[in-house]
Image (cartoon, rainbow, N blue to C red; front, side, top):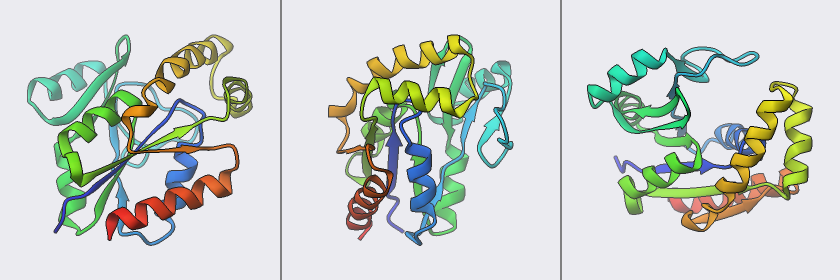
Length: 187
């Protein structure tokens, strides 16, 4: 089995998770890699489906045990990472791994897997549009939205380090471009 991975990264609210869900419905023999995090659940999220939720202390124990392919402290005390066991679970089923991770995680995973990885950066049309999307989601406080927007401005500077950039100004077109690029890579 060729252990290829596909990496999606973007600022929060750019639409990457929507694009990832679209791709998973298209029969590309990919499976979503469930990340681990120390942040609390949001909305309808479920442990073991959206994330492996754990305390910061539990997360640090996994770091100490070298259980992660990659990990990052994205915000103070808020960790995100990919458990090695998660990749083995997916490859063991004969599937390719699909990551939906922050930009630093995306760059790290690409560095680790090299040519066996395709990294895709989903670019929002503008910071103003991103603000509208985050406000419309109604999952974060005004203060958290401002933090996310400041972080988004920094994250956008990482786009050139990705193999492909998909501008999400039209969701259908962004989904189709992502599908075409990934189909070609997985052949």
